[in-house]
Length: 445
Image (cartoon, rainbow, N blue to C red; front, side, top):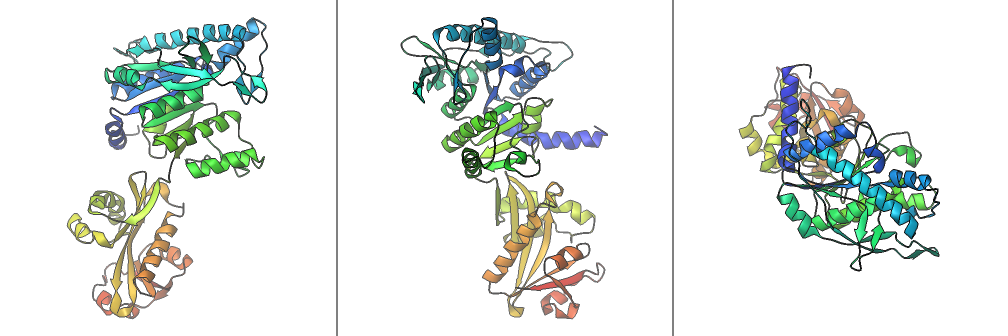
């Protein structure tokens, strides 16, 4: 933090998330490789922080790397089908050994209380149990996967009871059958089914990659911050048709993310396990650091409501202070709220505009056009303008005009032409502020 002001602004920006996440259930899935990483202790500190904020946590761990190492030590060879290990009786024994060892190590780390660290005086209670009932996958492509299974049922009531008592649930990638058999499960399958059964708020996968990058789609390498289920399904279709190539981990997580979102999960996050504090940066910043998948788009353009007044004021007040926009107090904004359009992103107002009709002159005024600084140069302003133009036409008007002191080029680039003050509607001429000396632009629709 460069100053106390930076700290205050940061704290204020984080507070709404802390409030919104309290008593919500998050499922966090991570691989066995992550447990052996030097940053894993920092991750455990972050888990403790989330728990202290009242987030109800279920941790689902993998053990693939530990299983591979144990099989190598025993000189056992295994086959894979569609990314799943064929688990014969000898392999199952090594799977149980590896999963049991890593499970105990994670419990120990969650229980530590280091002085002068985020874990100081920590009192996390870790709970485990026979939460997962499994069944065999069976035969795929002519290969019997034997003790490789899939989730049949989750004991959601038992997990929920433990979470309500303040425990952190730790679940391994093993499942039991009603007949007493043990099955080797995939991390992604367990995490997704637990999330659905608990109706979790979020399902979070920590991966070796930052998320879904456009490099996988033959475009310049840019992280795709948000995807809808439809967009995710399209990526998988292109991958199946060999149009693009997705890493196996992304392919698997994307399939499960689609299932989760179509069931009940509001958000699925794919983030890098290599970034320090990745889970905090993803959860407590508006833009996040990975890829977030949701059922529908998080963006919407709509008519403003009285509840939007506070958000609009936060957006326009800095521009009013700079003299870019004419000042509007809360009372005036409340009176004129039905004139406003808002651009909403994941519950946050990131853009607005107002439309004032002059029916006698067959024209409308576009005013108070503003976009949040984090979303400028991203076509949001263009989208607001197009919506305003459509609204103008719907009202039976053919002309759209605007007054500006700073953004003359932007209006010219979007088809507006400068006009004289005398060309404005008579009622607007009488309201013209000669001290601001705004330039007037009009566009014929």
